[in-house]
Length: 215
Image (cartoon, rainbow, N blue to C red; front, side, top):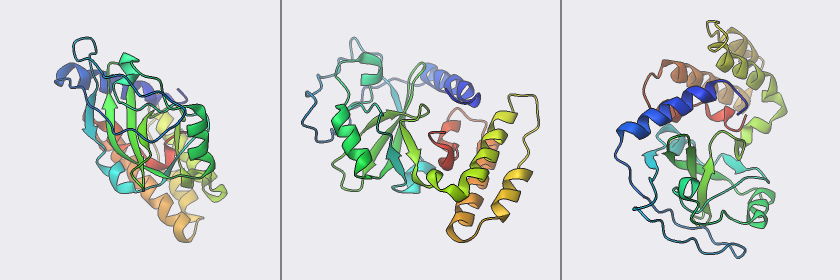
């Protein structure tokens, strides 16, 4: 966990888990030659994960990539049942090295888990990854020009846990220095931070700033 606001998200996920009827869901498996076929999840022994639509994230498009050391599971319930192994390391590295881009379509929440379902443009490569541990990142977050903005945004996200009133002044100042697509990305990200602070519901993670995923 890299940032303090992660604890708040986990609390929201735990509350959602407590009040939502639990189901066991299956995700279409990506093709892989170095992993065994997952065993079926047993509803009798597995508490299951609650799956919700990714809302805004599903509209982001294919702007996320896997880290080379990411852990990707075939099924959402594998995070709690451990009934099957994750994809092999060679498959994950292949996805990362070939610059395969993914979009987020759903979120899965358990007692302490928050995971995301990802799928590439072909629909053949998909799976579930932990949302906040660096398995997944926004491709635009690697742009050198956006680093000062991202640094300022992370400070804003942390400020609420330091007894400070969140201020977007510095982020707006950094956005003014940018041009073209970078400026559009910055303005969009600032709006998402505002939406994040404004959201008081149990599904606040669906409003998480896209540019900061993996940070």
